[in-house]
Amino acid sequence: MARIIAGVTSSHVPAIGAAIDNHRTNEPYWQRVFEGFERSKEWIAKAKPDVVIGVYNDHASAFSVEVIPTFALGTAAEFPPADEGWGPRPVPVVQGHPELASHIAQSVILDEFDLTLCNKMEVDHGLTVPLNLMFGTPKEWPCPVIPLAVNVVQYPPPTGHRCFMLGKAIRKAVESYPEDLKVVIFGTGGMSHQISGQRAGLINSKFDHAFLDNLTKDPKKLTKLSHLELMREAGAEGVEMVMWLIMRGALDDKVDEVYRFYTVPASNTAVGHIILENKIKGGKKTSAKPASTKSASRGKKSAPKMKRAAARQKIERVRS
Image 1 (cartoon, rainbow, N blue to C red):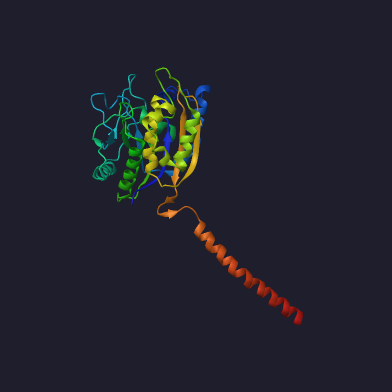
Image 2: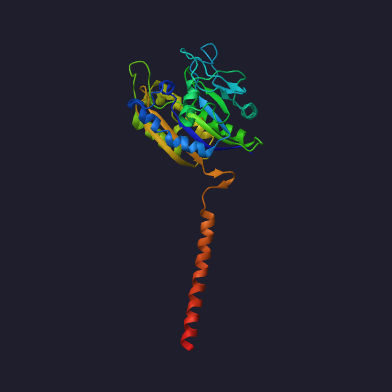
């Protein structure tokens, strides 16, 4: 059985990709951003996912104002990097997992979530930047990736609750796939930022930190945020954070927060990042509480016996 072992969130600022591509990651402006993902690279290298599901938003690369799917799932065998106006990024072609993607599509659609299926699609920085931040700059991405593009550009985007429930449907689909696969799901975009208008440059760190707190402890609270509330608190582009709720919906109700990172600014954007692990892996709890409790109970039973035995030995010594 396939299983989702963890979820990752990451901003996908295009300037981060430019800094990587132009070898500027050690410059003072960018150094803190990239240092914040060093532990994440170590974590994912140990986790060794067989497949990544990457939730992101397209930036007029695969789609345009002529066709705007709310949810578009990549079912192709590969997804080349898109030309976003200055040529495709120098990153590996994203290799897909058509079998699992098609299985997810069937399960999710029969659960009454309407998906657009993409048998041919180019992917932009929304997907490739988070892959860079987690995997570095390899010659090939270390595992297949299933892209899930979400409309958060053209009104109306899906609600946070709808995204959260889609995450649950994706988990159900993954767990019904017969092959033994470890899956990590990425939720990308955000955090607070606005790139135009009177509030251009807005960053709301207080809101961002509260969002990260609730993402771990009380995600259902976040599903109640309206689009207007998200845009008021986190800027016009802050609505991208509904995509993080797809990731969170695909995880256990209670999760372990492995790592968190937050910094500002990165090209007028708050960079937020979190790694959440499911408490159950491979059908077994990671906690050793049941075993330790059993051992403790045995210890309590054996202690009186040991005292009585020691007392008997003392009596025998006195008598002798």
